[in-house]
Image (cartoon, rainbow, N blue to C red; front, side, top):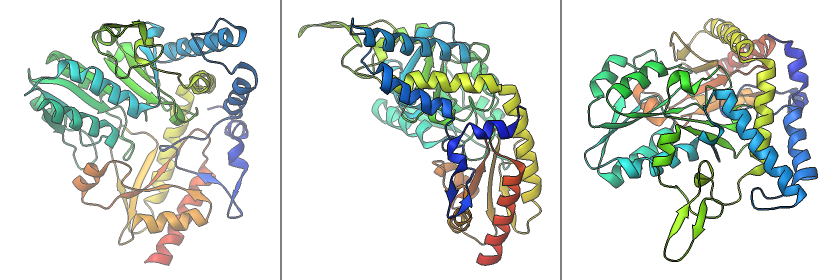
Length: 405
């Protein structure tokens, strides 16, 4: 791993004090902090490039358009898409999933068809499919999980049939850290004739993703979880599937010709990018991805795994500590409860110590009901976190236990 102190120096917010204490930021599964290169890139766009894209012939429009499309190409290379026009800029993973549920689902899911999700899904990968099934009078089926928080693949196989049209699963669980066997999930779905959407919001910042090696039909992720800006994300889709889909939204730039009698749609990727996009966010996302690539995803993955093991071992020494998410293959997330203590109370005490964790359902309410709990305390690690910060977390949890027991 590259020098962690050097990486930390790139993130100005980590120098801030919270209640007079050094900030210990352990809420990275919700959003990551931003390196100076990303902050500078935002300022540069608005200082030097600000203009609309594609529709102008003047200097600024040309420069902004070039930067915008270059970022699309960088992102395509990052996930190994075959073509840059298979990369659609969206507001985030949530919009990407809704785009597919509306654009592909409305076109190809019929009454009596089936859509499969899993118990591990974020609400964003449940609700759009529920809405689709309600519109189409289709059936939503759910892959169960075992007590370790792993999908039961044998049960998934039983759910698949010729009626299955879409399988939508997360690459990595935001609440438990479980890394799903997505390549196997995709292969099994394809054998049944279904297409697969992978929610990669919790994956791309931790591990290398190759959409062609996975053979994913659709893959979505959010910029703010990979050290980029909020409000920007990516939908990757196979060219033939994107061409077969209807646009999700209508407006400027997604059309070739408009008349009151007939409108014809633009080519990929613009067919799905109606209106003025988040030009700045799209450009800066490419810079964030370049930063991550320079650190190296293999280095990041190795270091975060080390943090996960260290933190898990330390926290398990605390009486009354209960870990949720014991998957054999896991990202750097520790989701836990202290016996007899509400997670919100633990989070509040940690906050006063300058330690930022997430508490609650983590937008995975069905999963929490599966385990019969009101939510968890979740500490999620990134490449700028340290073992010293984990030691402080352990001390904070011990203090919370002593105060609240």
